[in-house]
Image (cartoon, rainbow, N blue to C red; front, side, top):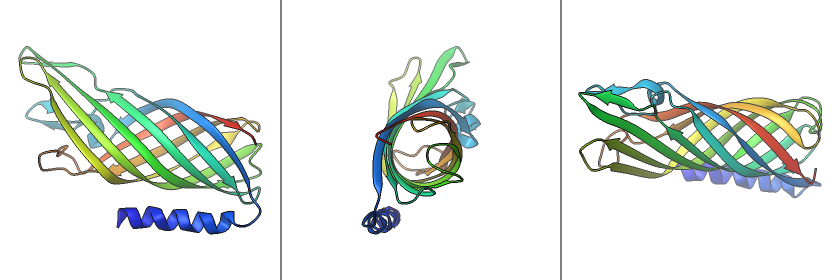
Length: 199
C-alpha cells in the first residue's frame, strides 16, 4: 500500500510533466531535532530514541516546474541522529539513527519560484538503521526498510538559487519484533538551507 501511494504520486507528476515544464536540480542540508517519542521515550530507564540529540541531514532534489506556482519535487535525503550520552548505574548508553529517504513533494509557490514563500507536502519511503551502544555488552542494531513517511512544511525563496526551509517529518516504523524500535513512529523537525541550480 505504501509503495502504491508513492507510485501514484509519481505517475500523477509524470503526466503533468508531459506539459511544458522546466526542470532544475539542487542540494539541501541542515539541522534536525527529534520530537515526540523519538526524543524522549524510555524503557526501564533507557532512552529508546535520540534522547533530544541534534541531528543533521543532507541530500539532493529535482524540481519539475509546471507553472510559476506549482512544482513536483523528487527528493533524496540522508538523516543522521546521535543521542546525548547518558550514564545509568555506571554504564554509558548512546543511540544513533540513520534514516535514508526517497520521496516526492508537491510545492506551491505563493508568488514565484524565484522569490517569496512556499508550502510543501510530501510522501516518502524510508530505510531506518538504529544502533544501541551500552558499556559492557555488544552493540545492538535494528534495520527497517520500506517504511512510509510524510512531511509538511514551507520555506522562503530569497532568489533563484537560495531558500530557507522548515518541515515536520513522520515515519511509521515497527514497534515490536527482532528489529522493533519500541515506538510506532519517528518524528522530527528540520531547518534546511536549499541551493538550486539551473533555474
